Image 1 (cartoon, one colour):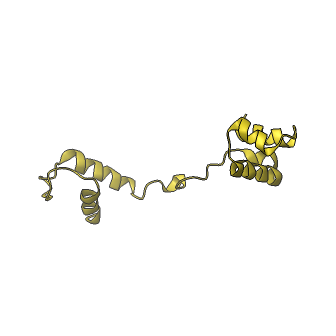
Image 2: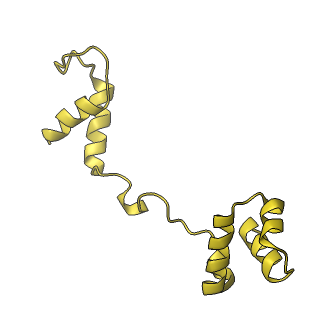
Image 3: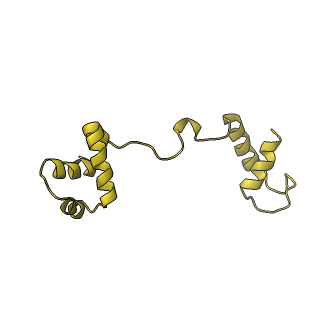
Length: 103
């Protein structure tokens, strides 16, 4: 069972104080408040973990698959001197920006 469900159950069912629950579960007041609010609005389903953080899965890459493949080929088949770059070691940002602008 999730900590949030246990913490809310302690308050709702066992009538424990917020302070007791915060100490038992080592959680902050704001977290406990959010969990109780979600429970009151949506019931136990409101306490399930929601994957809200980060970029949506369908937009993880800004590059098209063919661009990614092209970048891998460029990096693995060449070194900076072969591509006439003004440096001896790869830094990812500049070579990629230059090659992508040519696509």
